[in-house]
Image (cartoon, rainbow, N blue to C red; front, side):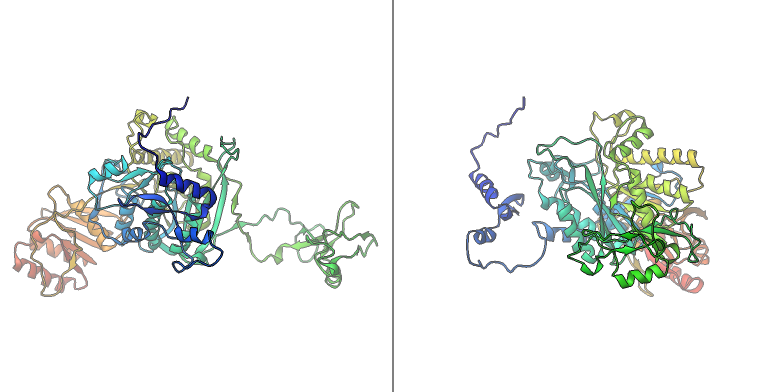
Length: 620
């Protein structure tokens, strides 16, 4: 028996009337904000007036666009800076010193903002599997200014890092506006990370496909649309009230710019033979008719005669020949028409391999040779021995798409990482062609159900599942292939800024201009914490090699050799400054307290002018 919850309120006549209007005119139902700023169903009265009028009703100027309550907020969310940083989590990392792969824990909008400088125009491929807005998944709440207790009040859920999540349920109307606001800001930033020939793939289902196409047309440009791939996700039918089982999902593909091409698939030449020793080489048979009737193409409706045997092939009134008689006669003379001995068969066109324009065929948007969701579930179960994640994407879907657009050293980003299927696909591809593709996984540490089987393995949130999946997948791939590739990953976690009160960009020291700032760095932050934030500020990739040395009792950090040298110790002696300057670094960073006084500051500036004039000097 189904128990209906009483709401203990009088009937909401406004909503009841909207329901009645929706039955008659579904096109006038939209979404708007109420007095409290919450999304609600509403009526577009201009459209309703038009439905009830036989003359043109004047209203707002019409234009082709997709808009919703919160669109301007989404743009603001994308453009607003944040006072956050990434902190290294070495204890969760694998092969920190050598790996070039990244796993980042935190709200993906914040992470995308933090990566903007370091990965601007550097990512070749983005794949995301965002919430589908089915009423059962979570959507991010991007109100950075609201206090944490308000998030709890609004959403009913907040993760251990303070990230905001709320369930866009059926009872909440599964509002398109909330989902669009969440997606728009993230996609807007992600485009800037793509290389000019980069591609983004987005998994989606019917709930938001129509809206996703529109916002992608707006963000990436409608001419950058590459295709909408379809794949079958289940074998058995799903129970549905309307007795229609939706058995497929989509992957939308857009380029950073228009004209981005896939590799295609290699042509199958196994059918090309040369039984008659034709001097033009191997050939295969192709259709010699077209799907037109004799009424549509009367000049292509005629009987065809085999010149060697005199046998007549009667014209087909519903499928005429592909060529007019004169062109057909020329092709017969050039030995391009194959006349069969079997009377039940029809003449065919000889297609020569050496006349093919390309060595590849286009790939179909219908992905028929990939696995279903059961494949993704099976892979997870093989790694953990229990089915701890039931909605992982099939490896074969991502593998086929990544093969089309990535080269051996490209960066692949997934900022809705989930169970980290993308990372496993990258490792698998690298092991197959001995390549060095690099992954960046981003995932909010959403807590899992206390009754979930993953809890038995000590895994408390989705990030812990994802990291452990990568470790286990790497171990399995290495055992099976023995490939000498990068199996590790560096873990970072979003945290508040390393600065106490204000967040500012370290400024380059100009000649004669030195800063007098009190130390405003939090006491619990390490030199490595500061180094990572400096790298993000200066636009250096987080995968670059890092090394720490001791020089005369001071800790000095090196990034990619002499690309960046930093020392965050107090009162750094001149002997250390000289050793650093002798390396001729591209950039150096010190703390304000690294200098004993103003005289020491000026001496260091003069020292670098003399020993390494090309060095950019920065101070925290």
